[in-house]
Image 1: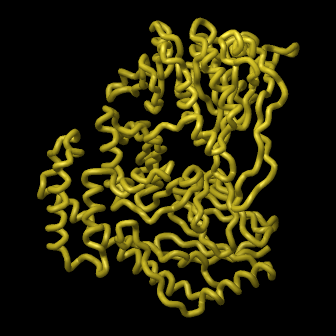
Image 2: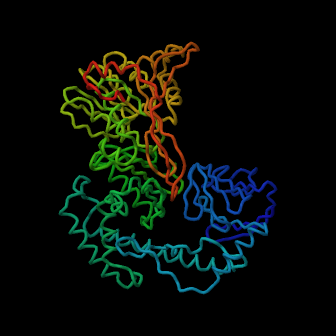
Image 3: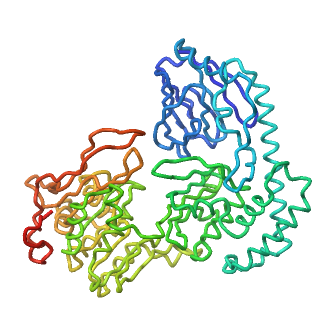
Length: 584
């Protein structure tokens, strides 16, 4: 199969004709790739493109991810039409095949694209400010066959020049603001003082009026002032996303690229930062109240916002495209079991069983992938702990919102600039064992603290809860075995498995499904060690997927497996099951 390739970078474009015998084209820095591209921003094998169908299947295997048309993929695949641009680092690649059936489709799309149309309006954000350097929706997503690349390059150079001028203008306005109000001398603790914002807004209005001749025609001045004020005092373009309760995750890929997650799906927004310096300023604004730092010697950090939202930030030299921020928002009103049932994450029967298990002091491990809702479920289950018990919560970034009167909340601390003062999750778990506490709730076990946590569960802290990363109950057990080995104590596998079987009663599998919904997909009991020396896991509840509905909605049913947990007698003894009530 002959593939025509257009590679563009820094305003320069070149065409190549490549014979792809297998129909799968690989792109990356490695010389063995079908299309090798030498760039520090591209991984050795960055992406593979399967061209055997009527659409391209783009599979990313890079560190920074790939933009296929308007879809961002990292470690996953997506199907896109031929002719859609594929962005890898600082390079953009267009692919067109010589397959007659596909070529005809591409040619048809090209003829449609060449028809004269009214120019589309420039996209604006929610405040009405025209975006700097943005393309109208749908423009330049496909390069028509036979189109003159020189005209496109000229248009893109003009667009890039306009964007550069706008960025320089915003930098100048910000510098004038800093000089006018001496913001550089304002203490970080006073930046959020409500009385400061009116002063900043008034100063910005005067500066914008003085530079009126240089501001592009049609720009909403009030919106510009608002955005610059947010950059100076708040979190810049992220402010409106933080205020929107329907947005769960905010991802700043680089100063020009910001994604959000709504309803479990990722969308690229029209928002952008002025430059990387403004992104760094936002990161510093988040970290300063927490006493944490980020610089070239320590270029990544985990933190939290005042509302409990988790923040991960990484800067150069590790982040090649510029400073990156990921904010996983935490609900301002904690979710309850009733709300999870309403959302379809579980059934009332499953909710009743889990609540009884918590009250009956059964130790529970919640397993799931990133973003599957483990911490949310942990918070919901922790609410079932009786109010007369003492609890300690241990987290990297405090998120749990327990309402019981006796709750000690502990948070890990990284090392300071001298390399001392670090307190890990394991340090805090060990300290909790010396405190007079009934239960320990650990946000996540990801290291040697798993050994201390299991020992606590089996020696007086029954009913403790934690989470871990795993995709199935069996994998969760294997994960716990691995984490115990990370404690640095050489224990035989048999001893580790006996400790797990003795300590953990219930495994809850939380999953994020293909339609973005989050559900409890399995609840299992660890009943002991079988004759072969393996930990015996018995399923109690399972989510059975039956199909796919409109718009990709996952269809399925929750069902009991028929196995009765061995600790049902505890429910009866503690009065959790009344006469005539179902055990589950």
